[in-house]
Length: 578
Image 1 (tube, rainbow, N blue to C red):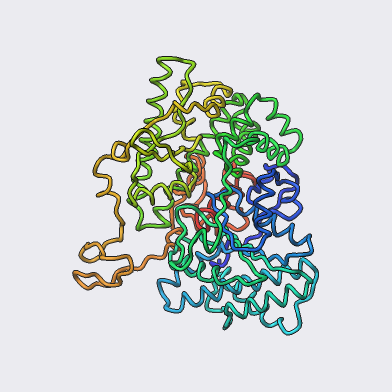
Image 2 (cartoon, rainbow, N blue to C red):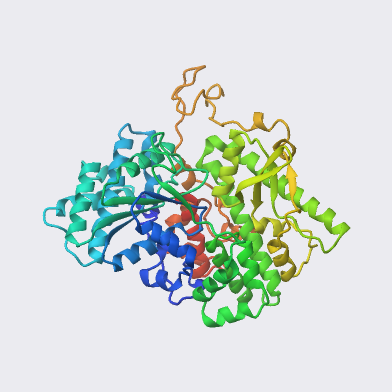
């Protein structure tokens, strides 16, 4: 089987037959225009973000996985297609990590990467012309075919078959100007999805060199980025060269519960929505546990409905919800720990981050238990105040945790006397699963909702970083650059090619290939399902799932139907490509 089948964009995603999320599709990039427009809830906030994507000026959308970045970009694309002023170009760069192995083998990888970035823009513009049923402008046919062939070669990992190309910024801007005039539009907006998540600093810096240059009086670019893991070029300044917009929903924002209920109603069949609605508070409970991430919310709802129809018929709605919340908590932590594989030099930072989360939530639990013992009607703490200053290493750790959605920093901070504190909110699923809210072992849904929504400014847990991590945390929070296989001397810097002690050539590891070879235990899959997969199939590595194109191997596993097989495939794709 060719490795080309591992390309995310080359895979034909199954489309649901109805509007029910049990059809298996949770990601915006996998939905058709009709589905996306029918299933997307647009409040005043969402309209404001969409308007910013249609306006002139460079802009970055930032948020953790599943927070809605792709939804906004694709919705903006479809809205602009239906208008008459903007020529929209949607591009998905999720396959950028496929080129990463070449950075370890070829000196021409960086120029080729730039060619691919620009080829994607040309291919995206060609797709827009097809959507508008407008022919390619005369004389540009060869340019468009070359771009599409180059993109296809990367998607299928046939880089040696990529055509010769000489795309440059000036030429691309001229091309976009012709397309804009050809369609009678006034401006061009580039909507660049999955733009900076390849976890290769070289690729990210090169992308932002191109992003910063793709602008003119009639062209502006918008891109989706992640917090904590995105590397910008020194010449690119966020706030000056591009405005930053957070898309992460706040659980305490006005109308949050109503919006999430509406999302559930749109994405569920009438019968399934009524089933959930009859369980008092379950939808609101899952909405809060999602921590403002719509994809996680929909995944938990799907799990509750699926489990209620199969192995847990006698379980109460709350127990089903708690099982889904525990799975969601485990998934968020596995997204975080996957950074050990995606950013191996930061392995020690991931270990410190796990300790920060564990001890921070334990501090909240102990605080709430003491308050409840004194007064059962007291408010519950759900945030952590970390005393400033925070070192650069811990800034990086918190950024990684934010990328995974495990914690959420609150802008502004708090001053108390002579001390300043940073406000950190841990994932609500973790607070629930680890009984940190002081509600006992079997709390009601309503009591959990009240604990997570009731705000008391005097109820807060204050800690210093050294208290949470131990005073030696800075000595442990250091880069892991890898050791020489011959003499075990740690390399001097991440770019070193030869050992400074014995001169042995140092192994250059490809992150992409390491991710493909990772054991399936790295995926956010429950232990019982993992054991079933291993017991009933030869699937052991992530690439085994990706090579199972038609899911025939997964479908032979007991209790794994088309929906669950599709979800397992998506988790493997996300592990490698997101």
